[in-house]
Structures are given as structure tokens and as C-alpha cells.
Length: 88
Image (cartoon, rainbow, N blue to C red; front, side, top):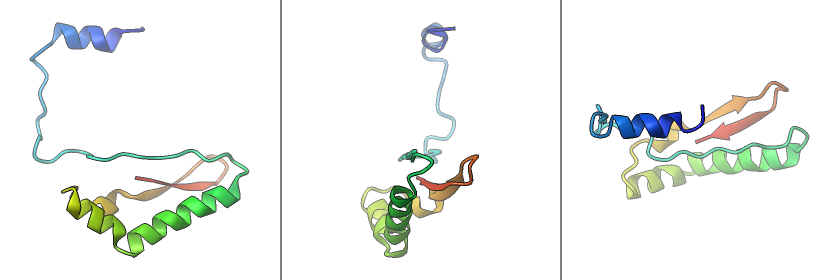
């Protein structure tokens, strides 16, 4: 049903509100897809994220931009072929 969300939002304008404005689910979201056979790029990305977390860089950025504990939301995911990747 194309347009259903926008129509619903328009019909209920002003009725929808954030129940937890002081505790947002997520302030920053990022992720990436890596081609199944591109192990070199996947390793590069995983290593970079691991270094950013372990060096404290993520914590410094989170503090600077008042993001709370951003590093706790960084995790690895595994696709159907067993490939892993990070999600932020």
C-alpha cells in the first residue's frame, strides 16, 4: 500500500508523541553491507570499528556529542552465509 504511512500520519497529526523523549532509542545509526566474497573489505571495516571502540575514540565522540554510551550499541551481525559485520 504505497503512501499508507504518510496518509496515516496526516490523519493523526498531533496525536502521535514520543513517550520517552529523555531516553531516545538511538541517536546515531549506521550500518553497512559487504559483498559476500569481499572478506578483505569486511576485515578492514571490522578492524577499524574494533580499534575505534578499544582506543576510546567512540567514547570520546559520544561524550563530545552527548550520545551516552555509544559503544554499547555497537555489535556484530552474521548473515546467512556466516559473514560477520558491525552495526552501529
